[in-house]
Image 1: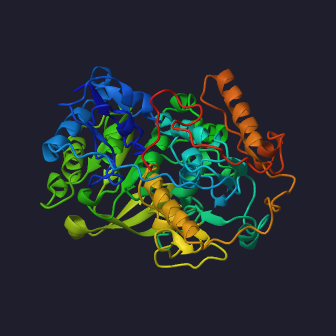
Image 2 (image 1 turned 90 degrees about the vertical axis):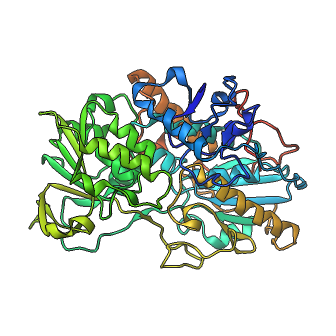
Image 3 (image 1 turned 60 degrees about the vertical axis):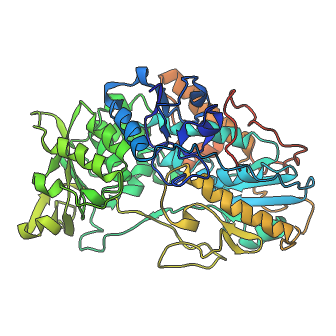
Length: 557
């Protein structure tokens, strides 16, 4: 088995295109593409050429001889996938649709949101000559959750930023960062200045528990906690109760595991990442020794991915344990394919014996929080059993910090309709109305991985171009956008100046980057402020992204 995917990958399908023998599945056009947690390499047909490694933007593929001990389980996962999905018919990839020919300057699009969803939408649009795209974001920095959501000890996942740099380097692309729609520009300004507006604003808030004590000091959102340790400028001055020995994280998705991992990590190891310096100092001074991760349901319904669980289980500096009886981990039949391997890993964790003196992460299933305890600050959490643990009744977990990690939720977008039940903008294949579109979490809700935004953006852009072909888009009022010229707007040159300053300080300290976490400091680091000139229209479409290494061709459109 020459090559293996070793983590939840971006599903960008670049590796599928690069593979000369079509051995990576599920590929575009096949069941499961864009829905599975990762792609799989067929060991029978891989020819060990290495083309996939050059194409992968997040370095998720490795030769089997280079796997670490912690990555060995991915061999079995890869083999099991092809036992269940043999692909004997060698189903071909989806055929690239005919290229649309758009005259130069014919289509000018505003994208609101510079995270993965917005940048993938820009990339899909810029596949067509004649299109120009201006990406707006209220922050002075782009990349959204790829910058402020991915845990600092997951630097491999953060390598997707290389793909984003390729996208923003294309002719026809420009930024208007530090530009808030509703403050610096209105929805009406965008509709006036562009043929179409694509909203990719994500889901910026979290879901609440709705229990007593939720607003006590020491009770907080995991969403905010993640933003704090990642150096988000909105959360640079936040403070968290790290003076107790136990913290509780409510929820059992990947965010819950991220938070538990960071709280129990060796600060010296975190010091080699791009974690916020303020957060690092607080974690060094903190006293947290144990993190309890609560799941209301059982292991079969756990939302964390198998690669994340395997990575957690492989840690040798922290005890990762499962609380409960072995019979509580037995899964019923007729479950998703990944439930069985998850249960096997969890059963192994349940059998572990704690090592005295180690920090620990305890996974506790079938437990529901009923009240956060404390008078002037959090002192604990009242819980009760569910399912197999219902007979155990009420219990109390002492803790100084309680973080809720039960999901993201979007805010209403001014000027657009809103479905409060789903937390999304109502749409039809991304169309809100001719000329106004949505993509990403504001379109489908907080689900999927970074790469899921690629297929989501592809659908929205296809709908937008259909409307262009049908003559449904209104021409802008002028020859170039006139709004957004406030003096502190940050263009592409400004972002590159911020990026280089952070990287330069990182090189000096032996880190990927040292993030600027103060808003004013970020603006001061962007000397080329103000709106970039309108991007020139593209004369022709290139087959490979500008600046991309050989083999990193585009995913099929």
